[in-house]
Image (cartoon, rainbow, N blue to C red):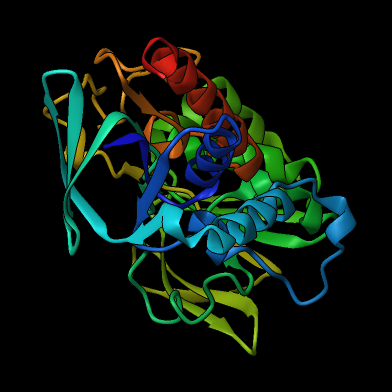
Length: 300
């Protein structure tokens, strides 16, 4: 039996695992891959890395450490977690049932794809899914934000503080009446294309334009230095959805230390809160590991 099983190999999961290992816990990470969202790091044709404070270097270090300690990692997909008396069964595809005294779920969230030509080709090459993480890279540049929700509205507002011009494509018209929507409508460097949708991502090595279709069926090409798809994330919480409390969007409900309503079961990162940013996920993973250690102290 393991002291702790960490499900997920992204920033939150890797951080939790390394913190727990340094507490001398018997830890196992179970994940389909390692790196998580850092594997899809956004790049532009001419980026100044010093402009962005991120946790990618920290995650890379933790990743190397875990790869060195290969006994602490099993590559597998977790299908279900069950509580049995005072321990947990982690049912995986490939490694069967794994047993632990406590579990940290750090499985992240899935983005909503536009499902248009060019999207996969330019993923990470001028096209990303978190404008707030990369806004400093687009100082005095042209940016396209795609999405209909408040998330897209907030992302466009933040990007507008640094970008030369922001095109916001697909925003729901009712959001134009909100205080933030009214502010953007008055912004000289923001163009709101409600009722429009992106039909194609274009580029030459890196994304440099999008095709946008209007309500009358006409298409327009918009040149851009970067595109961000800002739609609701889908948390990967299915394996514990019938075991712990989740909110209306499927996110696992946690307290400030990553504790769920089930003793011994913790969550960290985008599966528990919409963090989006690597640095926040790193901190969430560290807190969950410390909470798990505190939980285990009486039996260690």
